[in-house]
Image (tube, rainbow, N blue to C red; front, side):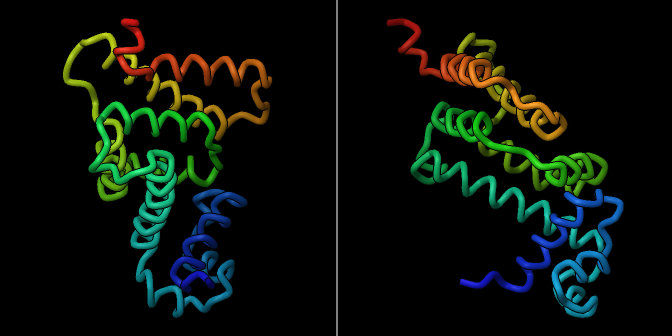
Amino acid sequence: MRPSQRTRILDAAIRVTERDGITALTLESAAEEAGVTKGGLMYHFRTRDELLVAIQRHLTDAWEAQLVAELGKPLAEASPQEAVEAYVRVGAHGSASKAELAFMVESVTTPELAEVWDDLIARWTPPPTSTDPHDIDLLLAQLAVDGLWLWRATSTTPLPEPVEQALHDRLRKLVAAEDADAG
């Protein structure tokens, strides 16, 4: 199935940002990369801000699809424990691009952009409301995975395989169900 022109434009805008940085992303550069006219792009996105919001949604939709696939069922049918476990598994094995990092950083300065990411995170990893050690371990695992994602987006050196494996093992222990700790 061929991607829609809208999806082609979003993917092209992400490529421009990956290659040249977010400041190089203009309606013109995205249109050129997508192989459409500026008018063709503006049919879908009248302004750069509209394009940025659509990119944020495009990225979060892709991430959510990975999370649901990892979870193996709709989020509404999962326990909070299962949702965080899926988030940690996807995050621990996922990769990050410079473009994704740039779009996330850009979102911090604009409430409409930040809302897209905040909604996703709130659904999958709501902050704990208790100081129960297991709830804190789930939060620590989430924060560790978020830090790993940031490190992968900014580092040029991969972790040695034994370190990567030890990190994944430790993350699995942090998110293990409470009953496993008691037994």
